Length: 346
Ligand code: ASP
Image (cartoon, rainbow, N blue to C red; front, side):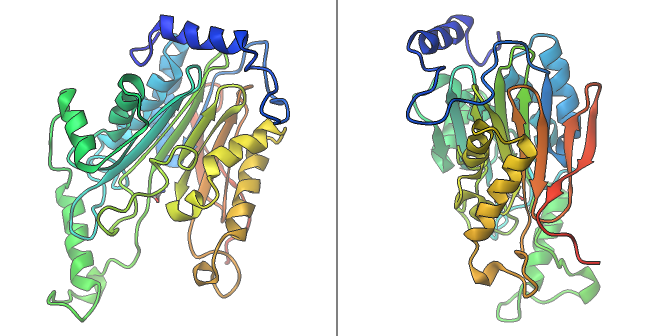
């Protein structure tokens, strides 16, 4: 068993759930359509920048590793990579030039969750979220408290800005408007887009145990203190070990409004395929989108993608407009096209 949860604890929780009949229909919900008595197909699915993470996660799972450890080790590749400016070290900062990181995770077999929000100066928020899950009675730690918690476990405090992310921030600050004291820089140096990015991974092993993790530096140039969907359990990611797991990347506020990770798992519980469940959640997002966030021709002016896997090891993803996602094909991680709600205009 993993370092995340002891074998005794794992057996205790699972055994208690069976004894209490919790693995049978309860709470007035329909029976989990995917409750399995046989083996699952090991699987991992997530955001496109999770290709390397999926390969590592599947290798760990094939050696008997725990699904949460596999997912966290997978996303740490991106957190530690200075070239990925959407997450961890090198992630783009808030409007004051400070990198604030968000992450959350869930471990299906023990039904536990952990998360951190607005965490500064620690490269791997997913690993800190896993420690919240493992060692506390809480689920979400934020800001200074989350940092002190990480430091108490030996994490090092580091400057998370790389030369490249600092340069992007400085150029954004110079170009955001004429009503301040920052001089504009030439038009060809303007940073026109407002980048977003995140890595989400959802992993199932052959025993049908499931875990999920999402980690991000959030929306670039955000208002200090803003947290997105990634550290919100039920939005940025969610796992129910009877059914499956789901996670998201894209405009966090729109996901939070529909509790998208949870909702996608609920749609799978009612029998939908992972892809259909993701599409159905996106339809709910559209229904909740205010007019100011819609383009004149109809579609929302933001991106949002959901990734999902069920207990059988079937996986899928869907987005507002076509994009790609990462999934295990039985041998290695590959990039595939998402299902989508609106075609891209030529
Ligand atoms: N979901 C992230 C957030 O809103 C950003 C992203 O995935 O691009 O913080």
